[in-house]
Amino acid sequence: MKNSVRLMALALFMSVVCWFAIGLVDADTQINIVNQCSQTISACQTDQSGQITSYALGSGASQLIDVGTTWLGGVIWGYPGGSADPTDCNTAKPQADLAEFTTGDNNQDSYDISIVNAYNLPLQIAPTSSGSTCGSPSCTINNLNSFCQPPNTPTGPPGDGCYNNATSPSPGPNPFPTACPEAISYTTDTTGKVYGCQTGTNYEVVFCP
Image (cartoon, rainbow, N blue to C red; front, side, top):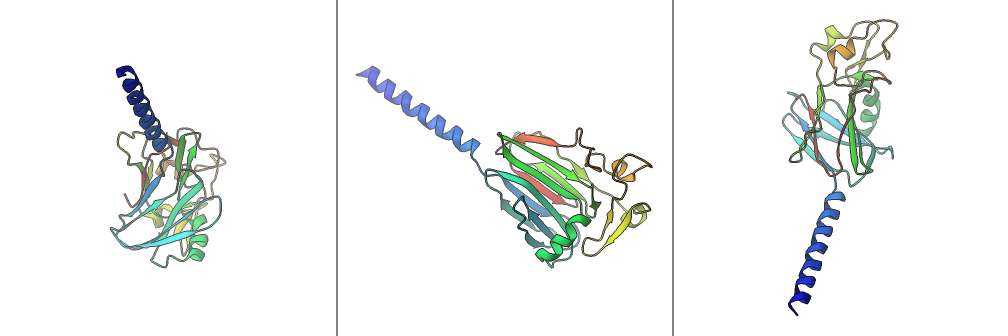
């Protein structure tokens, strides 16, 4: 009788452990978008579906988003001002630096900052789950007007950034990799710049870190 009770208790314990482990694997990923800039910005998000969601964030404000267990082709970017208009988001996307995510792919997340197209606002991605030491890439370019010299050109509104027209290491020097060594600055510039965490990790995307 005692052996039967022990076996039943062990089976119950293993069942709880299994359900707990499944819950960890299947946990939704949450990303907190934080505006630490001194001005209001519009934060935008999309994924491989192409649908854009946008938020007006005053200085110091944040927006928590739940991207589910799998988020493929996830992108977050921003632009100055509080219009939070999906049309403006779409126009600003190629004028902005991007926080790029793929989560839940074979129990692995990957993320990076891309300035392949342009740069407009200081940006950082940071894992926030306890014990996560997966890397926190950031990109900040001060005095953007002075920085944005030929062959790179200003984007104009709504992004108010600088186009990265030197999208390869040649034929001439590209100031973007020097300014933001942790960001991807041209299409083949990915070595050591794509970061990974176990699926179930939560993140912050911080503007003006």
